[in-house]
Structure formats: structure tokens, C-alpha cells
Amino acid sequence: MRWSQTLIPTMKEVPSDAEVPSHQLMLRAGLIRQLMAGAYTYLPLGYRSIRKASDIIRQEMDKAGAVELFMPALQPIELFERTGRKEAFGNVLINFPIRRRDNELHMALGPTHEEVVTDLMSKLINSYRQLPITVYQIQTKFRNEERPRFGVLRTSEFLMKDAYSFGTSIEQLDESYQKMYDAYCRIYSRCGLEYIPVEAESGPIGGDASHEFMIPAKNGEDSIVRCESCGYAANLERADTGRKQPELAGKSSATEVATVETPGLGSIEAVAEFLKIETSQMIKTLIFLADEKPVGVLLRGDHEANEGKIRRALNVTALEMADEETIKNVTGAAVGFAGPTSLKCSFIVDHDVAAIVDGVTGANEVDKHLTGVNPGRDFEVQETFDLRDAENGDPCPRCDGTLSFVHGIEVGHVFKLGTKYSTALEAEYLDEKEKRHPLIMGCYGIGVNRIIAGLAETCHDENGLIWPMTVAPYEVELIPLNVKDDDVMKHANRIYDELLAAGVDVLMDDREARPGFKFKDADLVGIPLRVVVGGKGLKDGIAEVKWRKGGDAERIALADVTNHVAELVREEKNRL
Ligand code: ATP
Ligand code: MG
Image 1: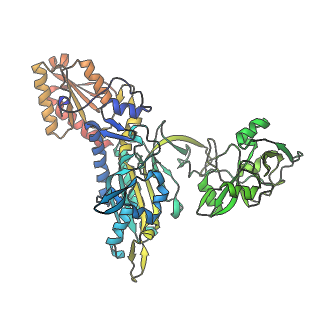
Image 2 (image 1 turned 90 degrees about the vertical axis):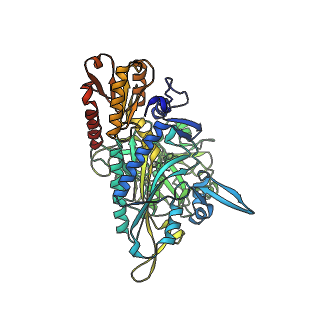
Image 3 (image 1 turned 135 degrees about the vertical axis):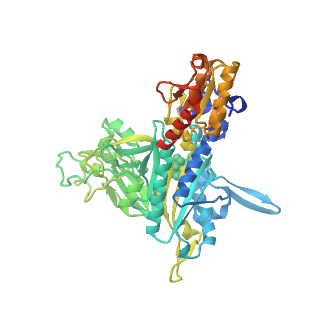
């Protein structure tokens, strides 16, 4: 491709509304342009990278035995009503009525395709002999994200590779899952991405049933909890801590429980400030509805409740914060004054609460708190649990290392679904004895745009993008220094034609512009290899070949340039 014939609107200025490097650089390098909040056009360079990433994904999916199909983005709302996801998605699900002749139909734009694919399989699968099978597609997804931001990292319309496995047993599911997991690792490596597979909330199957693939990045919206010693990694929702139940034999404290007036102070912070104590001295009492029954959860004041852990500790499926009415019933007070000493429901206790001496807690009376409260002495503690989010410095659950945090961008997610959708949509198969069973499913998603944005976010320097060879819009940028010079253009055009014939993706900057201007744009756009023809080099019979990622320029005889560059491209692609 010749620069003069394509559309690469590079920008010198950093766009004022772009906060993160990927957004700034993708705009400045002419990869994308915004249509409205959360919606972007991919310009030729950006779209070439999207297509290259898609090709790598397809190759690895096919190799893993998945088969490609293509499902409609426009879907009947009934499917989402049957699985309960119309409600679960809420405002995120874009849906609307349309008129067709005299009928009004209600449609949704697919945020993912579990419903459509399960409905499809309910019609196509009869027998265990047809299983297992994994299907996939690369299709646009629609989500009315509350806050679309960071350029194409979070948009209301994006490309997802989504795959779905169907099988007859947990063993088949485990095998399909492992194949997808391994394919994901190869995809991200080949795309030149640094990635961390992290354990994620597992849902109905439990155990090790879900992983997210994260790109470690300063501006990532997700928190990854990691142990440097053993490599344990989990997202914040899932991360266990290696904390143990402390000694529960009562630490004796001479301080007696006293009631203090805390008028209008219903928050941990307000009470701590008022009493001039640390929030870690407070015992936070949260009231939940667990499978519709009220239950208290005791945490240290400075800690955050982890709903997944609470659900597991209580062995319940549904957990939500209790409503005001329930809180009044079990505490006898307004919200903000709950405490364990006279609670009218059972409660569970986090490990760290048991270690508090002379704590402060709600008195179950409006505008009153208790001081000098000691676990074990003033309320019963028989057992303690891990109920809070992991924190920096917590012990690792797997080894004797400590946990720390890294920020990450989620680029993929693999999940053992089980039979949630197949039960709701009656997708069943007949076993050897002609008995019906729901299909056992897994689902596997990759954000294609996030691969590109994630690369832009993590592979750049102060001058611009630095693409890996495999997903770079072009592999080689050829720069004739002076396009008015016939000798320069004779060699440049020959090398250009030869590179094309050798199957190399080459972009020639044939613009009539100063060399410095072209070099700046080349750095900004970030094509991995640069070939410069002209100037003193031409007189010496050489072209300069240089990597965007750094290092010295090589001087290569003009006649050898094509072979040399084609070989470098091939080697670099194989390396990834
Ligand atoms: P997030 O937590 O970031 O909102 P998610 O967990 O809802 O993502 P999944 O339903 O697991 O996303 O979708 C699979 C993949 O699709 C994600 O791993 C991510 O890479 C990508 N993705 C999800 N939402 C968006 C979005 N709004 N814009 C771009 N890519 C997205
Ligand atoms: Mg996810």
C-alpha cells in the first residue's frame, strides 16, 4: 500500500479527551475515529490489525477443533426472558420494539450469544453420538455500558470471538475447557501480548471453573491479586487469602462495654472520626439476605465484604444486601447501627474480627454505638472465615509468600457454564439408554478490540506505537527519502514490488515531505521494520533497515534488501 492512496490521518497533538495512552495513540496514529461516546470507526490501519488478530484467533480455534459459524446479532427478546437474563442484564441489554406489518415484535441486540447458540443446539443435537462439539464465531456484540471509556477498551459495540462447548459429562466439559484455555494462551502469545490467566468467580460448577485472561497494565480497570513466589493469580472477586482462624481463647480485656452517643453517625468513617479511633478498630456488621433469610456478616471496619466468599461460607446460592425493612427487624434500629451483641439473626465472622480487642460496633439502637466490645466475650465466636477482599500483604493461600496487586485489562474469559442455559431452553440429548439430559456447556470469549487496544496500551514509547510483527497493520514501512529523485524512486519501487511479491505487508510512505516528518509519523504508527532508501546510503549502494523497537540500523546492499527483510519478517513471526 502507498501512503498517498490510503487513509492515515496522523495527529501531532494529544487529543484532550483521551485519558489513557492506547486511546491517545490509536487516535494520533490514525487507527480509529470516534462517532459518538462508545462507538468508533476503525480506519484502514486499525482495521488491518483487527483482521490480523481475528485471523490468529481463527487459526487457533480451528486447531483446537472448534468449528466456525455465524449467528444473528438481532435476537428475539423471548430467549432472554426464558433464561432470566433480560432482568439480569437490565439496562446493559439493548432492546426495543419494532413493527412488522401489524405485529409489534420485541428485539434485543446480542450482548453475547448463549441464548441463540443454545436454542440452535436444542434443534440440532439429539444424540450423545453428536457430542462433544465446540462452535465459535467472531461477531459484533452490543452492550449499553454505563460508562463507555478509554477509547476502544470499553465500547457499546465491540467484536467478540465467542465459543460454546456442548458435551454429555463434566469430563467432556473439562476437556473442551482445557483445549480452549490452551488455545487462548497461544493466541495471546502469537499476538505479542503479555498476559496472566487468573482464577475468576466460578458460578454454578464451582471449583476451578473460570479463568480470565488479563493484560497487566497500569490503567487496567481490573485488580489482579498475585503471589510473586508461586505465581498464584486471581481476580479480586475470587482471590482467597492464606489467613487462618486465630486463637479463639478470649484475650482478656479489663475494659467494659459502654454505650456512646453517635447522633446521625451511621457510617464506619464518621464514627471512627468522631471517636478518634482507626476504622480497623470498628467491627462492621452487614446484614445480607442469604437464600432470602437475614444473616449478619462481621468484618473489620477497614475491610471490604466479598460476596462470593460469603456465599460459599454460608453455602447459599442467592446473596444480596438486606433491605431497610429487614435491617430494622433484625437490629431494631435504622441502617448504620447494627452490631453483633443483640442481633436477632445468626451471623458469621471474618478471621480478622476475632483478633480485635476493645472494638467499637453498632448498639442496635438509633444513634448509639458500643465501645470496649470483645469478640468471644461480648458475642459468641465459634469459628471464623475468609469473608473479605484480599489486601496487599495478605498471606498467599498456596505458599508462604505474600499477595500483592497488579492492574489488568480483561482480554478473555473461559467459563464452565454447566446446564443453566440448556435447562432453561430445553437443549437436551439422548444417552445410550434413550434417556434425556440437558447439554453440559462451556463458554469462551475474547475481546478482539481489546487485543489491539491492549497492545497499544502496553507496547509503545514516547514517540508512538510499537507493534508486534503478527498484528501490525503492515510488517514493513518503506521510506524513500526524496520522492522527486528518480534514482531513489527506481530502487524504492523495485523493493516495494519485490516485497509484495514475497508476501510481505509493506506500506510505502510515498508522500512528498521532509524526511524528519516521515520518520516522526513512522515512529507514531509503529510498523515493526523500517527500510530507508536515499541520501548518502543510496550513493553507497545500501538501504538502512531498522527495528521500531530499537537497536542500530543495518546497512544492507540494495540488491539484498528484499530477501533480508523478508527473512527478518518470517523469523520474527515465528518467534511469537
Ligand atoms: P468487563 O468486566 O470488562 O465488562 P465482561 O466480563 O463483562 O467484561 P465478558 O462477558 O466476559 O466481558 O466478555 C468476553 C470478553 O469481551 C471480555 O473478556 C472482554 O475482552 C470483551 N469485552 C467485554 N465487554 C467489552 C466492551 N464493552 N468493549 C470491548 N470489549 C469488551
Ligand atoms: Mg468476563
